[in-house]
Image (cartoon, rainbow, N blue to C red):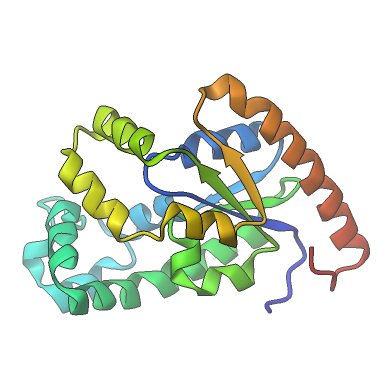
Amino acid sequence: MEQRQYFSVGLTGGIGCGKSTVAEMFAALGASIVDTDAIAHELTGPGGAAMPALLDRFGAGYATPDGALDRARMRSLVFQDAEAKCALEAILHPRIRAASLTAAAAATGSYVLFVVPLLIESGGWRERVDRVLAIDCPEELQVARVMARNGLPETQIRAIMATQITRAERLAAADDVIVNDAGVAALHPQIAVLHGHYLEFSERMLTIPSQRL
């Protein structure tokens, strides 16, 4: 396992579970947030560091007029073509990982919260964090939230969910769970309790750096 000087939590959950909302609430309590989706958008935006490799592999037709990745076209491709999906991941994942670890090393918060939608699915992330925190809610609620937020049809949302591990598998892999099925007010006490635990874990790690929590 990589040597770190900070305590870290990997926050994950299926689409529509409320990862961004929960991350913002932890940030308000003093955690440093490293959002891998935000890093991916930066890497694939106009002039992004991953764009030359992506266009070399997939062609100029996968860029928007301003030079960003055409995410809708790429999403359609990788849903249909497993080889293309692997190629995309081979380009993006190492760059996302490197940028995430650089950001974490520079973080000044009480601890680092990595927001990684596919943390469990990707395999390698489990060894890079000290705890895995899963955000959980019923699948029907996931669908309803994404339909309201993004306007996607239910069939497309369920296709995305089908590429993620099941709710039961995610819960089984998690060290900690936040249930997000009753609004923001119900999140506050759950987050407060976990934040207190994470502060204790962080202090313990600083005292005994090799300790696994």
